[in-house]
Image 1 (cartoon, rainbow, N blue to C red):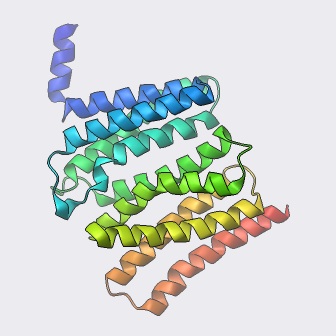
Image 2: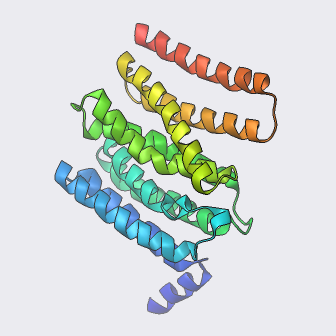
Length: 252
């Protein structure tokens, strides 16, 4: 049995990444069944372990590749902890290997993206998933928390995805921080509107994640030299459609 495990780990690209993903997934599962205080301990542990593990796996700092990528695994694990509380019963147990696989995908993509061995789309989708999971999970974990403080918590958790999105567009340092701040401002405005509408279920988190993605896409289009008018029409139409869907559902 021991020889089989050793042979399996040798065939795995970066077995330390696999072990980190499994550890973070197990912590996430513990958070699904824990009390609010226990969830706080789990999240703190994930931030520490995921942060140290991210630095260990990703390697030396290279300014041209960005800095936020070191924190992506930790924030993804926190998002998994929060969104997992939406599940119940046997589904939570079945979701553990799925979460481990998704976390391994995030870690693998961050390791290999600079060398061109991982698609950028994987990180883009992970960032959108993190925003959705955090927003949906906080609504369940803190249902009685009024919307201004809850929105602030969402923005805090979204700050790293916003920074990472700016780095993926080729913005680094102070410029990346500035673009991330504008990104968070747009998310905050959309989040305030959604909070006042009191939409049912996970609709509000889904629209918030869509808005996060739309703002990032619009910024990238403008960076690539696309005409401002066409960019506004394309992504503005997407935002309007999302708001119309929200209003229609709110009317029900």
